[in-house]
Amino acid sequence: MPNFSAPKFPLPNSPRRTLSYAALLAAAVLPLTLTACTDNTAVPAAGPVKVSSTADACTLSTHTTTSGNITFAIQNDGTQVTEFYLLAADGLRIVAEVENIGPGLTRNLVVTAPAGNYTAACKPGMAGDGIRAGFEVTESGDNPAVDTNLKALTDQGTAQYVSYVKDQAEQLLAGTKEFATAYAAGDAAKARDLYAATRMHWERIEPVAESFGDLDPKLDAREADLAPGEEWTGWHRAEKDLFPPAGFPALTGPERQTLAAQLVADTEDLASRTRTVELTADKLGNGAKELLDEVATGKVTGEEEIWSHTDLWDFQANVDGARIAFENLRPVLERRNPELATSLDTKFTALQAELKQHARGEGFAYYNELSPDQVRKLAALVDALGEPLSHLTAGVVL
Image (cartoon, rainbow, N blue to C red; front, side, top):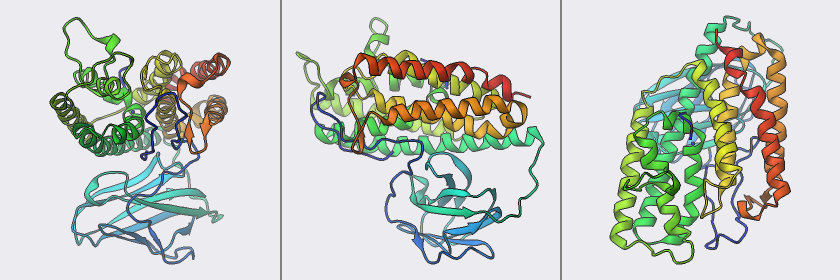
C-alpha cells in the first residue's frame, strides 16, 4: 500500500446481493445533513454574502452571486465553534474555508471564484460533513486579473488540499464513532450499512493517512499483510467478522467492544495528526499517483475488500482523492503543461464514466458481480490514466 481515504447508505446483509448504495460520482453533491441551508433570495449579492450559522441551520442571504471577488460574512449565531466552507460542485474539493468561528463572532472569507456551481457548508461543532446547499456563481463579464505567480498558485493548491484532508479526517472520525457504536452493541446489520461508506473517507486521503506509518497497519491492515504473531486490529478485522466466510467463528461481545474502542482511538489519533499536516506540490502529485496505484494493486484485483466485496466504494474514493489533488494543482499545470492537463481531464472523465456503469439505482454492484471483461475494462482505464498522472509531479514542481 502507498504512503499518502459520504454519506451513509444501506448495505444488505448478504454480500451476494446488489448493494443499493449511493455512488459518489464526480459530478454529485453529497446529501445534506441536519437541515438544508436557507435560501432567502436568489438575487445576486451586491455586497457581502451574509451567512448565519447555528446548530441546525446555515442561512445565506443569497445563493446566487456574480463571478470575481466574493466576500462571505459568516456570523456564528449558535453556541458551538463553527466553520464555513465553499466547496466545488462535487461537494468534496474545498475552494476556500474559514475555521474556528466562536459563538457570537463574525469572520469574513474572500474568494476569487469563476462562474460555476458550488456547495456552501456550515459545520457547527467542526464535525461531520456539515449543513450544505448549492451556491451558484454567474458570469459577471468582469474577470479579475489572474495571479500568474506560479509559487502563489502552488501554495494555494496545496493549502486547499490540506483543508480537504482535514475535512475528510473529521468525517472519517464522525463515521467511525457511529460505526463502532453499532458494532460494539452487536448491531451487525447497522454496522454493515455503515462499513463501506465510512471507509471512503479513509480511502480518499490514504497516502496522507499512511504517511503516519504506525497508524496505517492499526487501521487498514489486511489479514494477508500480517506478520506472524502480529495483532490484527482495524477495519478489515471488523470486515471479516461482519461478512464472515464459511466456518469463521464470530467474535465475542467483549472482543467486538475492544476492537471498536481501538478503532475509534486510532482514528482520533489520525484526525489529530492531520490538523497539523504539511503538504507540498510534489506530495500532492505523488499522492495522486499513489492513490491510482492503490486502485491498480488492490481494488481492481478485489483483494482489498475480500469478504464484503465493496471494492468499488474504495475504488471511487481513491479516484476522488487523486482527482481532487489534480484539480487543486490544475492552475499551475495549465500554465506549465496544458496538454497534460487536457489529457488528465479526458482520462479522469473516461474512468469516472465507466465507474458509473456499475451503479445500481443509487448504488454500486458488489465487486464479485462484475464479469472478467468489466474488470479488464476498468483496469485498462486505470492504466490509461496512470501513465499521464505519473507526469503530474514533474509538471507542477517549480
